[in-house]
Length: 367
Image 1 (spheres, rainbow, N blue to C red):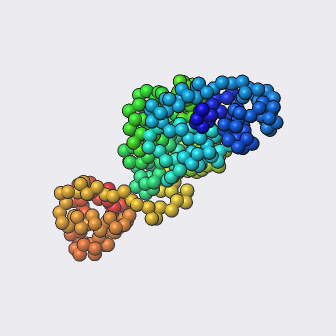
Image 2: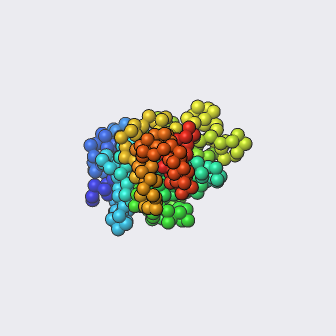
Image 3: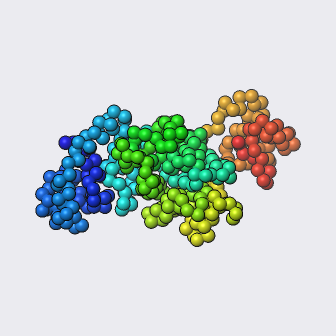
């Protein structure tokens, strides 16, 4: 028996959840000892007792564990036991975190920032637009941010797609084994995510996406992340459960407000009103609330290919604006050595070309 076989088998023992499993290993030293210790000694471990100790000794789970290992090896899936360095360090802080996770894709759980984005399955255009804009802006001001969600309809899939289009890593916590994708309509997105992020689950193959599993998978989203953002939610729903779990794990929770008469915004507005979530309206609000230091981070480069037809003066203006987040008309004129009137005319042409954007106060930034 391999070490992984023992680890998988431990996760399969009925009556032994994550808390007791970790307790067993703490007392016995390693996972193999759990299966080799006598029932009488097992019974002396706190919260085990004679009934559970006999169950541990009687259950033969090795064949099932070996079957899972064969699937893992064949399909390029990684297993992460809670004592492994690859296991998400944030999740280790949660008392009910699973003892083993399975992941597929290009994932490092222990780098960058992890933000959970959740919401209603019946998302409105308002919700989708806010989700897309928030993630797009995050990619510009905090590019080392991983977006975590649940691959469900509505806000979940919108968040994954927005992350992919913004070149941010994105991870889906799924409520079933790695032998299927649910809902199947999101298979193409899930496959695309494997290149920059991927899928994670605590469930073995042949596990159906049963209702209770979705609540369990929500705790992974809450536990793996630094903060949870709720974008549209009814009075009840999985996103509010995720927010409650995040609170129990001492994670920050934020919500985007909506109109008071919108049924999709009732949950978000209630979270804000009851001081269970901070109000955010933009990616900058999130960065400020989280106190992230982004001053030295690499900004995503402006795609020069977009500006191939610029004149020499226009290119000089682009170079001047790129030096700052935003810059005034006078500063641009001084930088390129042109009169303000001529610079203003050039900027107007560049607005029509979609190269620059005029901000309040006569400031300009690159689009």
